[in-house]
Image 1 (tube, helix red, strand yellow):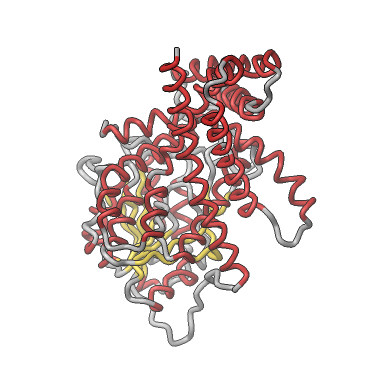
Image 2 (cartoon, one colour):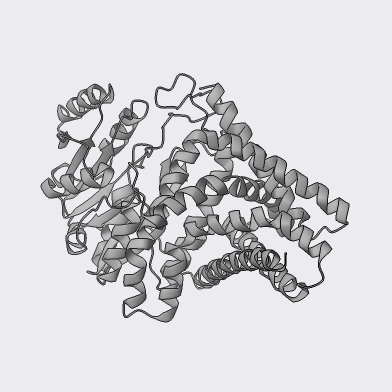
Length: 495
């Protein structure tokens, strides 16, 4: 029994330590962001002067079976304000359904209006999105390549506000802009996603940029210098996050990523739990694959210690989900050990201290959420319930994401799983009848339901032992797994 208790507490404390260190890295980014905000260093949109010579820009639209949103995307990109003789649009269409006909008709419509737009089809879907981008880049005319995923609707001034930034430094390889949200108010799930993404773009990307640390191209709504892509080795399909992979390879070669948060590219957030899970699976597994591939190179590179520290936790951020699952599953046995053994008081105290990592994450999200024009109490009134729900759903997705991370770290390969798009803007819209939405309930959903019961049992034990130290954690866990289970079943039944 002694060795079992030691094993449980060691694993529990070790996982909490990783979360704590990750939270410290995020807290450091908060400091960099706030310092830059006070000094007015947050980058503004570029200004196109009368004598500015517009370079040739190729806009790339990687498409695969986007029946519901592809026309909206092409129409938006066709209205970008840029000289017609300096703008090329590539619709990189790997579709195998009716999307092909829709794209062909829409491309022909804009061609007749004088736009340089091409419908590009490959013989096979080799390399998925990375393969499509690499092929498009090989035949592109542009010196700069702007990329938009199918769920984006860029504003007409997007290129004017971003491309001129490249002139400020010849080592800028990427200009990344901020994502906006078309359907943020559609449901609780879209509000929570917007909450999380806003913090990433407001605090994390700004903090990395101001601290001189490695950033990442976010896969869309950004522009690449073509020579940077070539110098970094081009697009690779050996990870599911080709964007993170190329970003790090480019920065290891001395290129910079320029982040400008005041240019916003609106996009549609996944509205159904199944779509959220698909996106989370790709992001978390891809990040783990990229860390496996590039972290040794980062650690060996001649970089400042602070940059290596942030790059390590940036690449390993998806591993947080494995640590969350470990601490969650072991928290119930830890409750027993706390109340039935007097041998581990010091280790218990240390582990409880590391729970502060969750408090640091709350501070991180608070800085991404608060509106400086509102009072503290006005901000808190809206922030508190959203933060509570975000943490709950974040924890509820932990097992799903941890499995994806584990596969990535172990080198298990899987195909690029697209996120279903629904063309949902407001509450009157629905995904009912969407042909891309899976009608099957994943067996993991059943496990998520059972885990909700497991953590409800942890709540009962808190009252049985009269020990409420882990009560908030178990409330979040039980509710989080219940919500993920409920929405997974409910959204699948109504697909």
